[in-house]
Image (cartoon, rainbow, N blue to C red; front, side, top):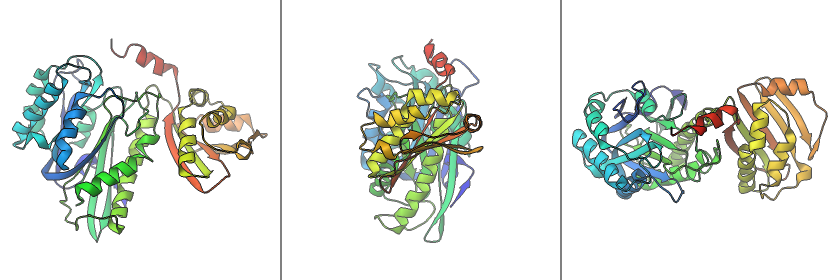
Length: 403
């Protein structure tokens, strides 16, 4: 398995594009994206658990009831959420792109992201679709830009892998910077693969993967209304179709996980106002659930996030977050270390402080990527969560996000 270029266009039979159609005022920012498969593909998705859901999620869930799709259209700049005619607008988006692509509207995944509660005018989308389709090609980067909101960088990755000696490829794009604290997925993620896999196993793969990837990311503790992860598998690689939980399925799972972990790190590292990517690695837990609860609690701690922003080795905040997590741990066994490219420094042993160099700790914590290593010394299970530091800029961004 290896990292390759191409994003959502790395796999055979997939093209993409992104344009500025006029939803967003800034003409320099793309606001409409399209991903298209030459043939109908197996499809699977997971959605936000927020009771307030964007209309596109309702429409997409209906469209994917049969387990197949052929295209994904997504606008940024407006979430199409809490609008009286939201379903109508989402269905019209599907109809418009389906007519242009000459496919069924029920084979369209539709998504929106942006401001909640503002009317979405279909006119700029309608006017932008012809150029969007005309420009379809190996333009995964343009599609990645088209789904961005407060993101500062586009997020895409792809890998190649083999099943039965046949090369397969899987790639994805994502957007996500704020309102990141999902209970299913993180903001919007679109994944494509030319691997042949039936809808049932594709859904199993995605639903299983997100529990250890997108569900372990947090930027600010807010769960969005429009979160969705969708994957299309068109089978054009030519491998024998995966229809059971066997060795081929495990290989596919590893490839999918490689893509999703990369996207998780990109999302966390690009959190609103963030200056650092934080990773909490928990080992030595009695159960997998305990490891996950501890990792997520540490990565969600506002005080820990603020300490990391200030490069302050305040390990007490880490223990505090573990203590209120609700996890069944023995606090007298916990070890904590901080790790970066500058090295590793133990700061806590058996739940108590130890002597360490504040100067060395500061050097380690000034790096752009920090690992908070927690060993519970109580079992064999582990888990990882990703987040970012909490900065002045986060408040500035969200203080006037709408206006």
